[in-house]
Image (cartoon, rainbow, N blue to C red):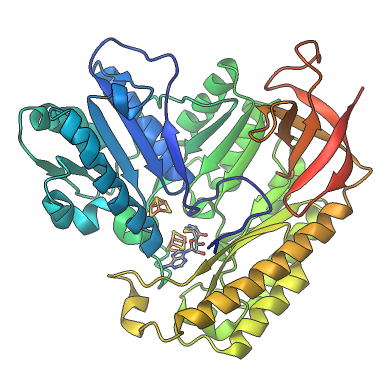
Length: 468
Ligand code: SAH
Ligand code: SF4
Ligand code: F3S
C-alpha cells in the first residue's frame, strides 16, 4: 500500500522521492560524478550545491552510474522507510563496486550524522559519509577515498548556508532556492533538527540576486525553501520572510514564486497580505497541520491549537480567496485514540484541502517522541491512514470537479510521462493540467504560459484544451 498520496503533485518538503540528478550535457573533463537524491526539495537543492562544489573542482556530471567514478547518495532520515531504501540501494551498489573496484561511494545528507559508524561499517560498501553542513570537504574526502582512505565529516554548523556556491541545476524551468537551513522547532516526532542542526538564514540580497540570475538563465518559476520559511530573518537586518517574498516578487515580476514549508505558528497576517499584493506570488500554501486533536498537537510540540490553525485558514481565505491549500498529516502518533483520529477527519472536512501528504507515525531515535513509545499498533495506523487517504481523495476529486469549464494560465513543463502526445503544466494554484500537444508547430515551448480550459478532472489531475 502507498504510504502517501498527493493530489498536488509538487514534491513537498519531507516527501520521499528519488531523483537522479543527471546532466545530459556534462560539463568539465575530469572524473565523473553521479548523485542520487532522496528526501525533500532541500535535499534536491543540496545535490545541486554538491554538484556546484564538485564541478568547481573539475568533476563532470555522469549520465548514469555506469559512467561514474564517484557515486553519492544524498539521503533522507525522516521515516524508517526512507532509511530502508538507502540500505537496499547500498546493497545494489555492490554490483557496480565489483565491476569497478576504484569506484568511490559516498553517503551524504540526513542519514550521515546518525548512521556514520554503521554506514562506514556496512560491509565495506561506503567510502565516505558527509553531513549536510560539510559539503565543502567533499572534493578532498573523495580524493582521499580514491586512494583507499575512508572519510567522515558530519559536524553541523551554526553558520554554513553555502551562500557563495552556485548550484548546478539540471532540470527544467523551475528552480529551488534554499533561503535558510536547519530547524529550531523541535516537533517531538521529527528528526530534522538533529540531522540538519540549528536554523540559519541566507542574506536577503543574495537570494534576490539568485532569483534575478535564474530569470536571465530562462527559469520561469522559483520555490523558496526552508523547513520553516516563516521564521526567516535576514542576517543583515533587512526584514523577515514577508519582506524577502516582496523583494523577490518585485525583482522578477514575471517569475512565478512559490515557497515551502510554512509552520502555522509563524504564519503572520503580514505574510498572507504580502502574498495577496503580488500577482506573481502563487496563491498556494502548504500548511502542515499534522493532527486535528489539540491533545496530540500539544504532544507533538506544534505550538498551536486546532482553533488557532483554523484562524490562519480563515485569514488566508479572506485575503486570498482563490488560494489553494495542502497539508501534512501523521496518523498513529503515540497515544492517538479513535476520538483523536475522528478529529483529524473532521478538520480535513472543515478545511477541504486541495491535497495532502499523509504518513504513518514512524518513531525516530533522539527525538522526544522516541521516549514516549509507539503504542498504536501498525494495523490501526494502516487503517487510519487508509481512511484519511480515502477522504482526501474524495475532497480533491470534488474540488477538482468545480474547476471544469474554467480557464487557467498554465506554465508549460513538457511532455506527459505516460503519453508524449499529451503535455502537462501547472496552474498557479499548483494543480497539474494535462492537454493534447499538437506537434512542433503548437505555438508554445516549455516555459511558456498558455491558457487552458478544463474539460474533465480526476482527484490528481485536470484535463483540458488550449484556448487561443
Ligand atoms: N518542516 C516541514 C516538514 C518536514 S518533514 C514542516 O514542519 O512542515 C515533512 C513531513 O513529514 C512532516 O510535516 C510530517 O508530517 C512528516 N513527518 C516528519 N517526521 C515524521 C515521523 N517521524 N513519522 C511520520 N511522519 C513524519
Ligand atoms: Fe520537523 Fe517540525 Fe522542523 Fe518541520 S518544523 S522540520 S516537522 S521539527
Ligand atoms: Fe529532508 Fe529527509 Fe532530511 S525530509 S531535511 S531529506 S530527513
